[in-house]
Image (tube, rainbow, N blue to C red; front, side):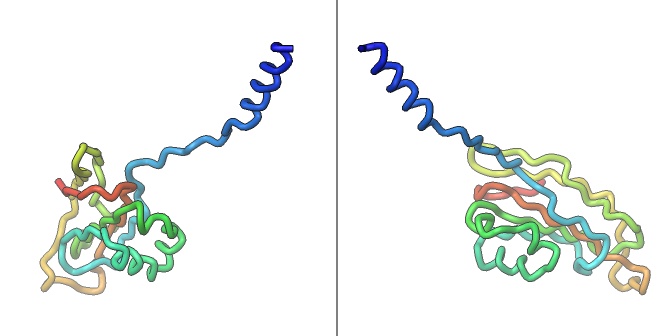
Length: 141
């Protein structure tokens, strides 16, 4: 009788166990690399608050890559490379490291920029948008 009861209890516990796998998100994702459409100055901007992140939803391309949960669980960084005559965006994310207190983003900027006064129709304004799957403070290095 004890064997039957213990077998039934084990079968009940096994059938009630969770079989869903929790997928770990990568620490960061490059959402968009665009060779034109950025700003005329070189800078980066970190979006941490929900109002700022909702502003990104105005972009048609980014709207498809950002969901409602990202507003409360992620931060976003936009890197504007400034004016250039180069065709390919040369601002790259080398590494992103999570420390106990912050997120460190290492970038490499090999973009050959030109002065804003020298711009013409061939001038491009590349930019990159990344999503950091953390709400810790971000430091750009």
